[in-house]
Length: 74
Ligand code: SF4
Image 1 (cartoon, helix red, strand yellow):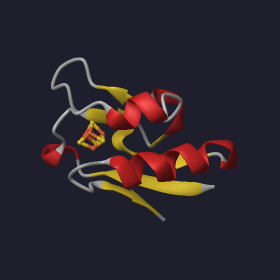
Image 2: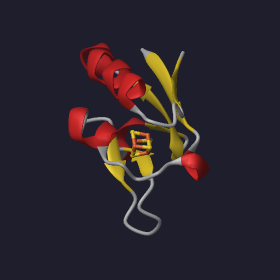
Image 3: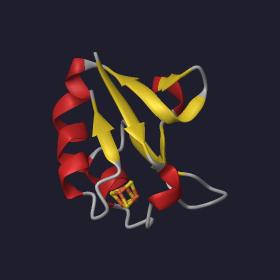
Image 4: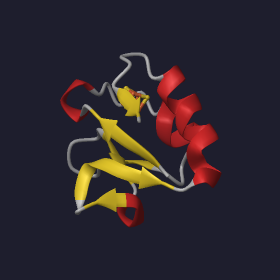
């Protein structure tokens, strides 16, 4: 398991993360910023998630591609 955090207020809604890793990231319908897909959220927090190993690679790719570097993996 890897923990992911998104610093949502700095998101530019570029769509890179949910394009490369749609099982983990999605667009929030209200503010258009990235959020963690519902089933992976920690305590219902849209900005934090626990990611199964099968999605670690695409999550890391999303973090690398993010133009403002606000996706953090632990
Ligand atoms: S890649 Fe970064 S800036 Fe782009 S939508 Fe995802 S979190 Fe936002």
